[in-house]
Length: 107
Length: 126
Image 1 (tube, each protein chain N blue to C red):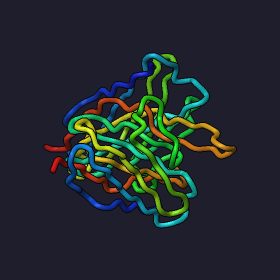
Image 2: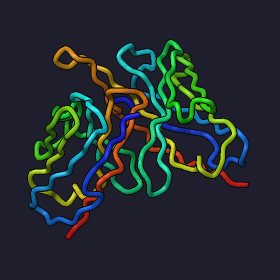
Image 3: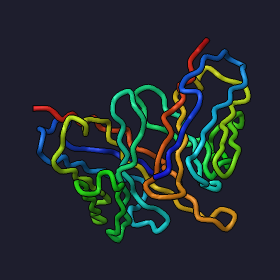
Image 4: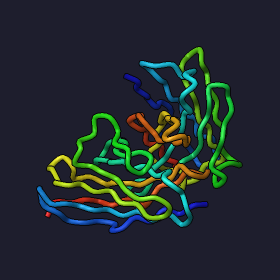
């Protein structure tokens, strides 16, 4: 099975900050990497698919990059509504698997 | 716009079978572009993919649960279902259903989950 490791597990940031979250796969997954945002008490919502494609309706301050084993989600200017937990997910090989999550908190 | 809604018992006794249904509205479960997945999340923890099913009934499960999981689809009701047998406290979680989107992107098949249902909390306890 492919293990997905996210770092950091949590971070504190201020509105307007640039935030970067990393995700590492235990083996090559090409660009089969998706990013989700989950707010408390809500279901996850896809932000980025195929490593760098922005889902329709998602603000352009979100971007994704990477391929192979190392991936990054960047929020260019953190907004109040972006405080949430973010998960990466590989769709390369079954069983599909998620990272452990990164909680973005208000500093 | 497509919406998914989970339903079923919120409390299941240990060793019994958990049964959930996901109702799809605003779109057809028979749409050839999509699979339909179940994902769960224990409280305060990460996400675990349980498995997926196609409208034809073809299914694929996470090997960690495969011996206890079964999925089915009812195209006449636009629903798909999950059963998980011999449950224990470790199966206590929020259970989500989700549409499994497949596309060809730059000549390569790729997929992601969108949208998700709101989730249903299932507690395993006597």
